[in-house]
Length: 507
Image (cartoon, rainbow, N blue to C red; front, side, top):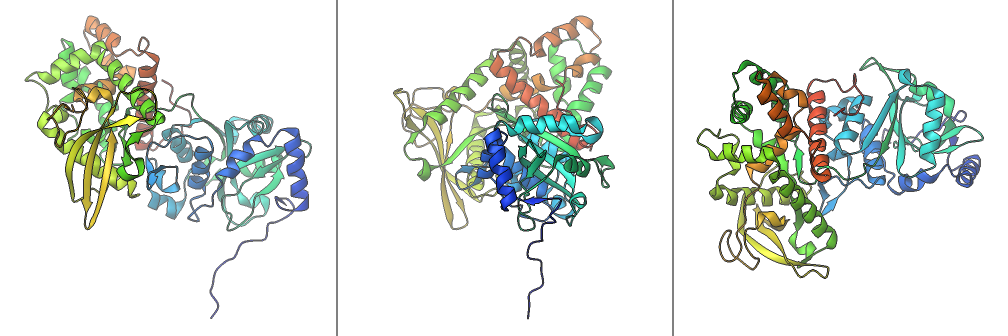
């Protein structure tokens, strides 16, 4: 019996020209000679086929992010950090995308959440000449890529809304190369730029908004060196709402007299699982893959993490937070990391999450047991003889065991380095990622208007001075701005406004 199904589609030509055809090859060679295929090489190196019929937006985005060499700061499978469709779920659940597809605004939001610089335009906000300018500019460079959202019917193709990156531009014929991520259906093909504009200048019936295009580029510095806001847990929705909406009202409705009362007001009604919302970024690796040394790259990242920690601790706000958390008035929901006895549990949890991530489970499934948690020291692959502390744990999950290493920033190590079979003994004592550091970073990241409800003008001025990022060192300033952007985007997702507002966070 024959198997029912579809094996590819015949590419309607015209209007499209198959990339592999004689005419398509000539356009390609001409464009190379004209210098408008520079972006093609990086894109084709990471070209992928969407894994689900409705995953065109996710496949396009993961392809572009990998081409730009943006570090996802998460493991994909094994020890590898790599963008994959399965990791692009912070703006829309994957099951919903699989069933319904994804909107233009949510792809923009996903790109921003992943750390990319994004400029997005609906066709109602620009014109075909500006589009041509952007296509030509990005095609002549490999640091910027154009992603197009269009309707297939304009090209006489089957299907409706679709996302694909633009791989190049032929100036003389005014044609663009669409690297169609639905390679099971259509091959890469050239189309007239004006016709692509018409295909973008259509309405997405789901949102009622026009389609368009976005320019995606790599930021000057990788964001989120040490801290990140997590939307992997359902609690993010309520926590984002509390921080942006409820805190300003609390400050406005209370008679706040000093900085301690400001901090107390913020933490008084924190959601119970607040600690899952802001987390420090741990460097996790499989012990047997890494060997007995760390690379210069790994050591460099640890050094930057350590510098961020020191700069947080040197802020005037940190002193107030530290004193507050040490006082009897401290709310328990913020002091979840202040007990030394609790760090063993934290270490075990980190190792378990690391094992899940290395197994490709996203770090969310947990594990049955983490044993033999200890600290060891490794040498770096450089001329610096100073060793690096590593938190090591053996994780068991059913019948399987996984040895996991977590590289520890130097500030977490209290004493000299050596070998120890348990935490806090011998010549090594590991201190936990302090709640005062984490909470200070989060307060700095709150929108500036958060504090405007404080009635006492002198206190308001003092608080504004403490939370101002203008005088922060550049490294910490970028870290705080990254958290603020994340909070802005999460709040926009929570309010379902990503399709109404395509702008990058104005902070």
